[in-house]
Length: 98
Image 1: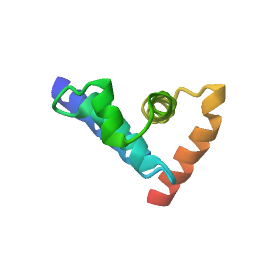
Image 2 (image 1 turned 135 degrees about the vertical axis):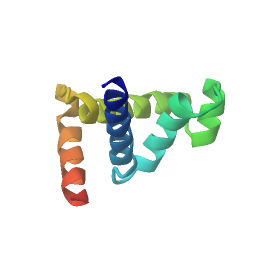
Image 3 (image 1 turned 120 degrees about the horizontal axis):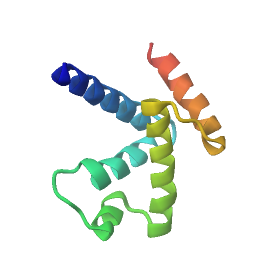
Image 4 (image 1 turned 60 degrees about the vertical axis):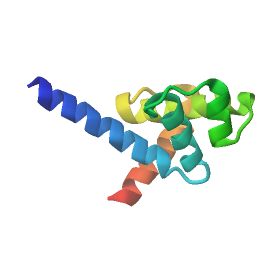
C-alpha cells in the first residue's frame, strides 16, 4: 500500500511539472527554476540558480512564487485569490492534453 501511494504521489508531481513546463510563455523557465531549486541532484547556491536560468534575484522570487502557485493548484487544488487566473490556465492546458 505504501509503495502504491508513493508511486501515485510521484505520478502527480510529474504530471504537475509537465503542466508547469507546458505553460504558454514562460513555462520552460518556470520548470527550470523549480528543477534547479528543488530537484537538481547537486545543491546549487542561489547565485548558481540565477546564472542557470539567467534572471535577477528579484525576478527569481516572483517566478518562484508563480511556479509554486501553479504546482500547488495542480497537486492540492488550493485556490487563492491571486491564483484564480492560474487555475483557469491549468484547466485549459489539461483540456488541450486530452
